[in-house]
View: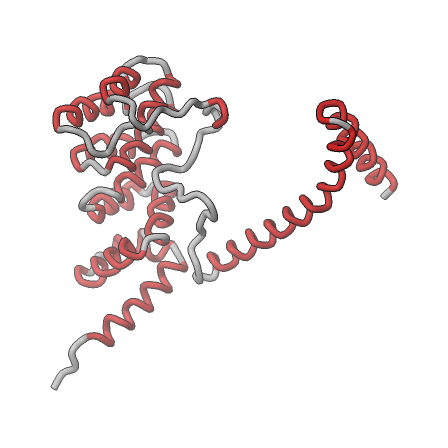
Length: 264
């Protein structure tokens, strides 16, 4: 107990001295007052995380991000530069400039340009972008390949299906994860989902499950396909892997049976 108290006292003194030297003595003392407040906030966040985990384990609610959708990818790689150091591209930047950056060979420019590709562009520009994306999908750099998958998930271009399938066979999990999200956003996602299930890739499958959990339309589309066509691989590979989806499927089946016309 005495050792812990001594260590805490040293940390408080260090905090007071360092912040006072940079911001002044008043800010130094205010920083000490923030410590109990931050501890309370961290404690509440921990309990909230445990509650979300418990609800997900019980099949009562999917895990969701509070402030960020994270719909295009699994997030930044550990090797990515800090967010504060990344200069975001202007939304009005010409496509020709984006294309030049994609082909520059400079990692930072390439990753910046990939997330700046407009979803709606002319047919000729789209063909140029798609060809460059195909080349970058075979890059030796993991971050570039992962960002390609993230970009394809945003673009929703059906003609990029082959490129997404190529990324699905990537040896790095983060690339496969982003590709799995992109596959689910194609016009015909269910056959592509079957491909993921057949690959027996646990991480990519989990990414698909999380996507479906958080989208009501996707859930109903999957449930309808499983029920009408008796697609047991999709049920076993996706629905059965989530307590939340299993429970929602059972509720959905009850409603569907209740809406069936009764025999005379």
